Amino acid sequence: MFNFHHLHYFWAVAHEENLTRAAQRLHVSQSAVSMQIRKLEDELGHPLFERRGKRLLLTEAGRIALDHADAIFAHGRELESALGGKERERHVLRVGSLATLSRNFQLGFLTPLFGRDDVEIVVRSGGFADMLRLVEAHVLDVVLANVAPPRDASTPWVAHAIAKQPVSLVGHPTRKRRPSGLGDLLASEPLVLPTSESSIRAEVDDMAMLRLLARERLGLAVVPTIVVRDELDAGVLVEVAPLPLVETFFAITLGRRFPNPLLKILLRERGARRQRSQLKLGKPTHATSASIIVERTPPRADPLDLTK
Image (cartoon, rainbow, N blue to C red; front, side, top):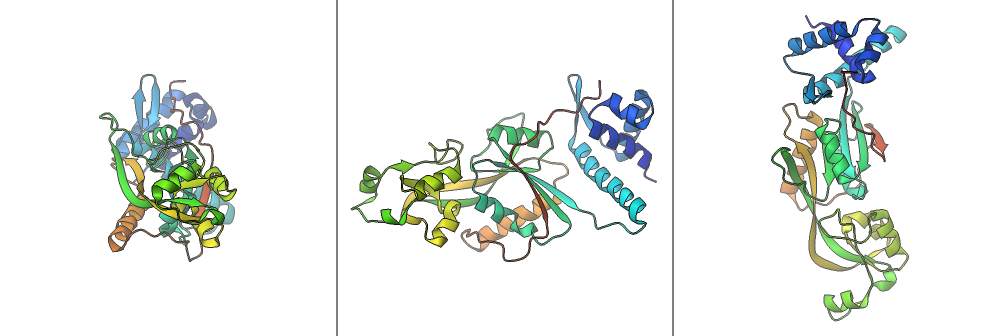
């Protein structure tokens, strides 16, 4: 039978991020805590921490164990307070995204999970390198980006090309006129370009600012039309001319021994959409029951140090 006493020791250490504080909280010695964690690792058949120098990091199995431990002990607290049955288990998907990535695209990618009351989605946005580090630390399950990860033999990134979006010149309705050709249009109109952290190239590092500049008649924006879908639908902006460019969107993760089943659902659904037709993202038409947490600035992914 599974020993939940061992799991409780692991859970305390993982949340305290310090062996000494966890031992004090549990009113036992540090050696006792270490022994209980080793027994849990033997019981599960997987290491829960990996040593890097003098530091110990949660492994992929350790991150999964912590998710389940959180759910188990949360149910126990509910049982104590309500003396009733526990709620349905909630599944968590942790998503990272570039701070400049189209919100419309992110919404479209996550839509298949909306309507599920057993799902919690945590979205963190930030710089590309920061998001990749969080995937390496098993803090995130996937990163959504419009650039491919670097090829690194020591870090086997898996980049799923999940969408290709056409790029157009977009501007205020007063700029919709027809020169003799695209060359004349590019030569006669000021352009507002996206960030270098994009497969298009760049001047402005914020898509919201790029849309605003176009709406204020300061130039034609070079963007995938999905970025300004709402403005195009409302007639606030117009597509002045299509460009011979596409922007590729990626879902980036690492090869996992225990992949998040929610991510598998999203990737399978995305693949089915691409097979059915050219991707056209729309707003979700059903109620959103999934719990969504958005964090603009990701917390530091400091390793778990059990040597202190």
